[in-house]
Length: 528
Image 1 (cartoon, rainbow, N blue to C red):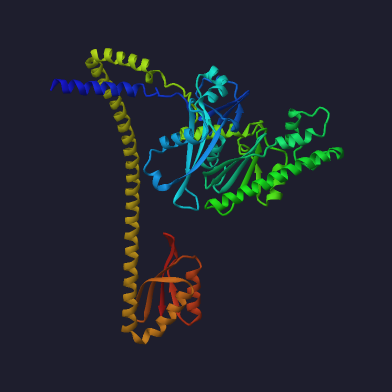
Image 2 (image 1 turned 120 degrees about the vertical axis):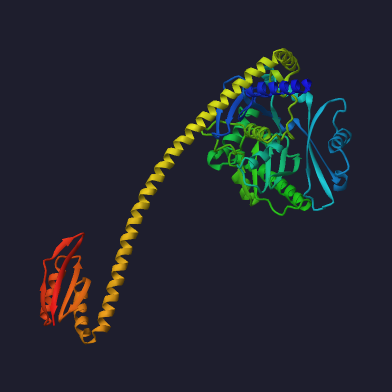
């Protein structure tokens, strides 16, 4: 019995300690701030503010830290698989085996393999597995400069998988989209349908052919760096070329015409293989950045909506030259950590948990708890007393609130009681008025039918009273004399009535007109 009580007390103690130190988290990152690093470029994305800024702080900080894998560092491999097989195998192991056997990778090297199973084939019995394969050795070399400074990278993305974050974060509406990236020696295509990756492919047709054709012109000072600037600054914009540079533009257009034809062929192959009828949009960029007016040129040639990779535009209030793939990496990092979806995270260098979640921290924490257990009962009593004190304060506050509410309700009750008395008085007065009217009606009725010969006179008198808006309280007839107690609401009404009676041949005598309680009261006597 005593052991059971002791166990319960220790558990309560641990819960109390955990409650007191609830600020200690397993990881100390901030979900709503992401730092993207690529080479010398460092930007921070403030998710809630929808704002990108240059980052000058330490990489060892609370924002999530990310970067992306260049497309040319990845190996792509896809294969079809029967849907019935999908349900029977350990898919991850199956894909790894398939990759090492068929994708041409080095068996002695370690690889990070990410994949997407696509079930949109027209052949509904099969699915396609799209894989992206990156050497761990290449990852270590590529991000050595970040690891040297920070010691970790929270997320490493690959562009083909990053596009999903555009839909999940509401930057793009879901549709059938093609993302095109022009590389020096190839073109990388990624198809998305309704926010899901469907197909990836590389085409052996890159910007190198344009470079080679322009090199043959023997332009003075022309080199690879000048070629990149030419594409980004002038590209396919005729307005930016002088008359003696038009040959350069023609060569670029000719090559882009060939590229457009290759893209059209690839789109047609894609539509034949997959259950997707039409494309909604095409997004284009290059490994150097957006090529000037390439989107407009391809839109005219392809007959489809074509746009640049300016997804970050509404975040980029400072008009910073942000690498679109770095922005995509930052966006995907936020999405992946917010929704705990790390399927496409290539990082092998995740940050360590906070101290008390590491083995050394756990050991120290265990020692601390052991020491605390020795004084558990006194501490338990102290914590119980502290708990009662806190509860007492809370109850006192609650009582004060209830008393305040009670006073308010009492005030409301007194106001309602006063109103009730007033309404009761008004009801009584109205009831008196109703009884008076009933009595008057009864007297008129009795008078009318008891004294038929006098009915015409009564009718005439009543008509003149109504005409002048004068009302009778009591009508009496005795020995040829009508005595009527009456009232009106205007000063001139009773005098007008007396005048009309006299004009109609009645002999009228009246008492003084008295104003009382909003009415003009008098008594008139009419002889037959």
